[in-house]
Length: 273
Image (cartoon, rainbow, N blue to C red; front, side, top):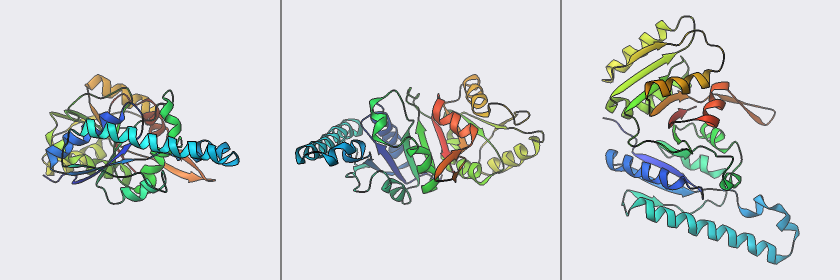
């Protein structure tokens, strides 16, 4: 079975960083993969630009804060990785956070965390870091919700299908989970959903995956909310979907379902742009 052999994990100072490392460790052992765990936040001097205009002492404090952040995250890595030789520590990037997307080009899969606006660590990154990373890197990502996730991931999978390249890439990235899942459900919205559902079912059968089909009805209303409700009803522990967005006037504009899921996810989501 083809699996993801190179995994890149984003680390920050949020309480859920340890969860990301533990999930990565489980996948590394199951897939015999290599995992790179990399801290990535805005430098303190960018988070507190007033220090640039202050005394040299203020700048020194910012540098100290960055060093303390690095040491704290490394301690979390050492604890959560359990000494696994498959997980390696990478030093923070000099061009963080923008350089993280470049590093992701050399990974089969990213493991990221949902942004929690109530967490003090949320200010460590731009608010659009996660969706921008998906778009700029073009790599699939397993995103863990800040409310926590059941383990193991992928016993019951819900696939949100559209006949788009984004959804197709997400399904391809999900194959290792789909092949081992106890139940796979596929939902597609639209008046003529039966045809694309059956086409995907045929494709999945060639991969050894049996899926239950769910015509979702007209594509209207709160698609993201509907997906989360269906996932809850089915007892799904993994949602697979495309990430939709485009740039307009130097700002990212996200599709409604993408925005809702990133803000309100209640289960791990495998996304690809």
